Image 1: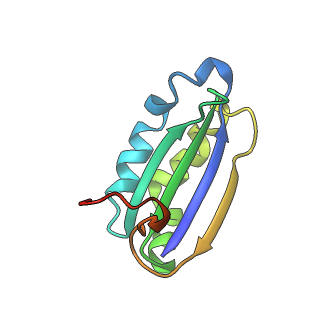
Image 2 (image 1 turned 90 degrees about the vertical axis):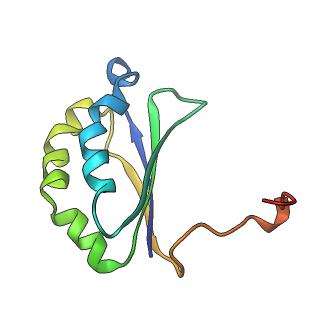
Amino acid sequence: MIFITAKFRVLPEHADRWPEVVEEFTRATRAEPGCLWFDWSRSIENPAEYVLVEAFRDDEAGAAHVDSAHFKAAQQTLPPHLAATPRIVNVTVPGDDWSLLGEMTVPDS
């Protein structure tokens, strides 16, 4: 799978509204057949920073995402809300789901 983590530094005046700003893009991406997950989190240390954790089934699914109409729309609509260019880590890893963290095993989970 393709595993991607991106940090978005949002302009302070848009930080509280960011989930609303990305709502349509998020919904459309999650509906893609090759999307495994697409989840936003807000930084505890910097409330103007959001972290996106996403995964796609394979290179084909990743390419379909980048070629989608909603991705192209996001390229136009999201930057005006940003304080800086997002930073990204993009890797291909084996598997198609999260692995368990063996060092913190919870009985009966």
